[in-house]
Image 1 (cartoon, rainbow, N blue to C red):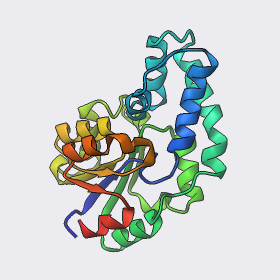
Image 2: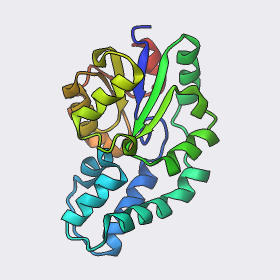
Image 3: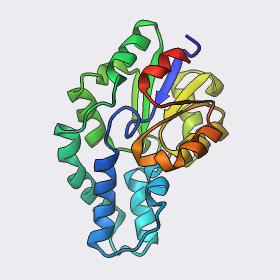
Length: 213
């Protein structure tokens, strides 16, 4: 096994949640008749609920950050608690890596209110050494420092950690921070697959490929 410490994204990487995530986030803009560009998903995915709320306010949405975060959480809760599945081969690969002694960690833009119950329902919460939301670092995955802070908390050199994400901006930023990066295919970001490949050390279309790196 080439890598011994992993840092996984959650939405679109471990779980097949991006259709629900996109539906929730765009619903808020649509309900308030706020126009947005075709790259909106690429922009907001690394930001977390707080960062996305601030971005929406910058687009002209006349709501407080607190109100927007509550709306996002309410709209998403049912999907994460009861419906969103793990992506193909994720559960078995995580167990295999754990059995080989790897350190497994999660860093996601999603809040603990949906993150933790979803991982527990899927039976994989306890397999991770750390399960972090961006909220735990008071910044977003668009900030290189969050990856360095995560490395310090893990107790590993930033360059020894393999970060996996389906989002171009997150992969690019993690690479800038000094992490090794593995891009992950997800249908929601498929149009950016070549961009992700260009900034990553590895790229996988299926989670089972992780075992061959």
